[in-house]
Structures are given as structure tokens and as C-alpha cells.
Amino acid sequence: MAQTALDWDGQGWEAHCLTLLRLRYRVPGEFEHVPASDQGDLGIEGFSHDGCVYQCYAPQGPLTISARYERQRDKLTEDLGKLENHQAELLAIMGGTSIHVYVFMTPIHDSRRLNSHAKMKAAEIRSKGMPHCALDFDVVIHTEADYLAECAELISLGLTKRHLTPVSLPARAVQQYVGLNPSLIATIDGKLARLRGISDDEKTSLRTALLTRKLSADNKLDEIRGLDAMAWERLQELRATKEKSLEIECLLSQVEPQVLLNETSASYRGTLKEGLTFLTDSDALDIAWGTTTDWLAECPLDFREPQAS
Image 1 (cartoon, helix red, strand yellow):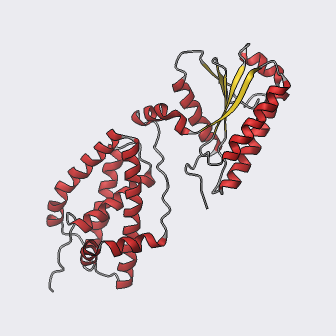
Image 2 (tube, rainbow, N blue to C red):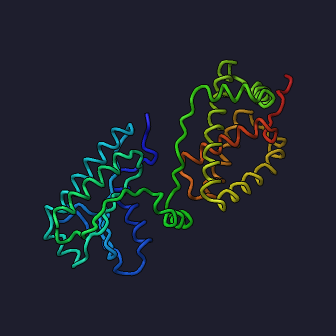
Image 3 (cartoon, one colour):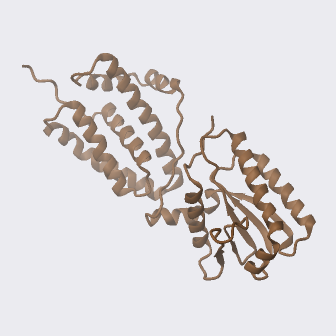
């Protein structure tokens, strides 16, 4: 089942969209917010003096593509209807600005049926000849991808998080990785064998959990590399710095292997959160455990041999 990539609630998404729009329209007076808290919603969150109006909607819950489309379609239909029902109020608020483009902002747009519906509704509105809607009135769908510069600015200022794409790994993905990397798996298994108080079955389950985090982290790291070259370089610096000290830390450590494993991941997660403020808690956790698994397989992270009693 396809799920919403960004776990926005309605108010959070609206606030985020308004922030993006205020960054896009920097000159005072270029953009005006239209609050709904007094005398109701007019079907728009705000408008710009270049003839665009904006409405935000974030459907809730894990949804199929079809279910998400149906909610977006119904919301768009409802809000476009308010353009006709509130003509006098909109004319008074917009002060003579004609609406050329109605922008429907939503976290995920993954159905072309929504495009078709938007064009159909735009044609209906043009046919009505409403005084506040231009003859070339159109309806378009926007997501965060239409505001990359504004999103990057928020991230660089530490004012928002970059929501990396959730990764849903099929069960066979870990099995395939194990089959293709026998030497790395042997190294991991040899180290996990030193964990005391854990059964062989639990060690196998732990290895599967670690490899799942590693594969998830690999996908998220690839996404960061594609989205933000500077962030990728900073991440590589943080990883290299930790690797340089990790071998010495392991030689000096007197704690149990499982404690050292947890401490390594927790410490690196803290480093990521401090050095890359755009990471969410979940993404930092995935990357920290994924990288820790790499270190298990590639030797910087090692455990002392059990001491003979």
C-alpha cells in the first residue's frame, strides 16, 4: 500500500506552505494570507498580486493512490466551489486582482486523474465568467518539489527538516544482500558471536535487523547525495571523523560488546543530529544504525574477545 511520504497534519502543512510562499514572495504586499478563523474559509489560504491564489490540503493516514486521489479530488471540488459562492467577499479581499492560477498545494501528487479533474474544474469556472476569475483561469497542482529553492533555504537555516523518502524493503532484500556478500556477513557474524547472554536465534534476528537498517540507510544516503551536494560532503566528513577515532575507542573500551554497539550508534546519531540539522529523528536513527552496521562489516567497529575466567 502506498503511504503518505510526509506525515503532515492539516495545520502543519498549511503553516509550512505559507512559509514557503512568504519566502517566494519577499517584497511586502506581493503575498497576502487569508485567515479562515474569522467568518469562515473562502477556499484559499492566500493570494499573490501576480494573480495566483493558493489552497493547501494534506490528506491524512496511510492511503492507496486511489484513495488519496479521491480525497484530493473532493477537497479541490469543494474549495473551487467557494470561488463562486463567495464572489463578493473575494472581490473585496483581493482588491481588483484577478485570479489567473488556482494552486492546490498537497504533499503528494501521484495520480494523473487529479490533473484531469483540475483542468475540468478550471474549464467550468471559465465558462461561468465570474468577475474575479480571469479568462485564462487555470488550476494546477503543486508539491514541495515546486519550491525547491525555498525548501533548501529553510533547511539551511535549520528551520525545517528534510523528509527523506520512507523505505519499504521486501523481505528478500536482506536475503539477497546476505547471498551477495558472504565475506562481510562472516565478519558481522564473527563479531556478533561475542555478544553474551544472547541466543543464536536472537543473534540471527539482530543481524537481520541491522542489515535492514543498513539497506534503508543506503537508500536515504543516496537520496541526500542527489538532493544536496553540500550536505552529502558534510555527512562524509562526519563519517570519516568518527571512523578515525572508532578503532582506538574500541581498543580502550571496557564495556560489554552489546553496550559498545549501542553506544556507537547513539553517539553517531547525536553527531548527525548536531552536524546535519535537517535530519529528522527517524532518518538520523536509520543512518546511524546503517553506518554502524557498515563499521561492523568493515572492521572499524570491533569487540574484545571474551576473557578466560
